[in-house]
Image: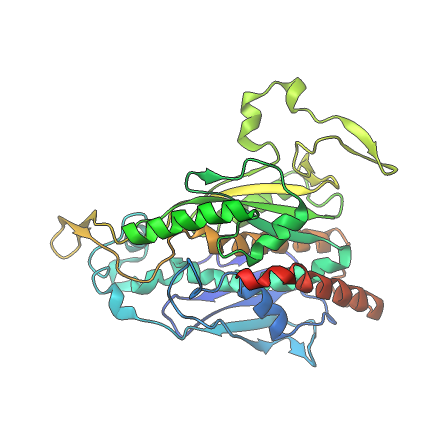
Length: 390
C-alpha cells in the first residue's frame, strides 16, 4: 500500500491502524536545533483527541512517545519518529462490519482492491480517521518551525449542517475558536452548532460542515510553477484527509457567478508595500503566495458511521440486508477535522518555506531558536482566558 508519505524536504510518513497497537509518524527534514517536547505535540493533539464533548466517545489519552530525532529537547536533524498507543480499542463492536460493508465508508473499495482476506475491518483499519493523529503530530512540528517566519495558522467551522456563519470575523476570533467544543468562532453560533450535534446524537445520525483556515504572515512566493503550485499542493494535502469532499480558496466556487470586473482584485499600496484591496484571491495568485492572508475552506461530509439502519449486502450470501453501526463515532467529524486541516496546511507551507530558503534545512542558529521559542509560547498562550469553555 504505497502513498503514505507527503512532502519533499519536510516529509512525513504516517503509519498504523485504528485498532492496531499504535499510530504514528516519521518526519524527515526537520533542521537540527528546534526545541521540541511532548508538551508541544500534546498541545496540538488535544484539539483532535476523541473522548471529549460532542465527539467520538472513544477514550484515548493520545500521549505522544518520541522514539527518535530528539535529544535534550532539541531536534538532532535525524528523522523524528513519534507514536501514540491505541489504549481504548473495542474491536468486538465491528463483528457485524466484518460481513456487512458500511455505506459511505472505504470498506467495499478496500475489499475490492486488497482482497477480503487482507482487509482490516476493525474500526476502518488504515482508512480510519485515527490515521490523522500522525498528521497532527507533524503539524505541531511544522507550526513551530513556521514561527521563524511568524506565520500563524488558525481554523474554525464556517458551517455545520444548515447553520453557518454569515459575517466576517477577526483572525483572533478564528484562533480562539479552538477552545469552543464545536469549533465555533461566535457564541451564538456555538449554541446553534451544539443544538444540531445533540439532535444528531439523539437521532443516531450525523452532520457535515465547512472548515475555514486563515494563515497570517505567510512568506511571499511560496510555490513553484507549474505542477508544484502552492494551491495544487494545498489541495492535495487537504483532499487527502478522510471525509473531505471539496476544497476552495479565496472567492472559490463563487467566482463562477461573477464577471471579471467583479472578481479581479485591485492592486493598491498597503503600508509602503504593494497589495490587493479585498484579497479575493485568498492570498494565492499564479500558484504563488502573494503576501495577503491565505484563506481556504474545505467540506467535510457527514460522518458515515450512524446508528440509523442503512442498506448493504451480506458478503456471506451476497443478499441485501441492513446495518446499524453501533461503534463510538463523531456526530460531526468536521469538529475534530479542523485541527487536521490546520496541520496539513502547516506541513505544506513549511515544506515550501524550506524549499524557498525562508527556513534552514540543516541547522537553526541560536538567534533563530530564541525567536521561534518566544513566538511559540505566545501562540500556545493565546486565548487562554477562553479555555474554561472547552
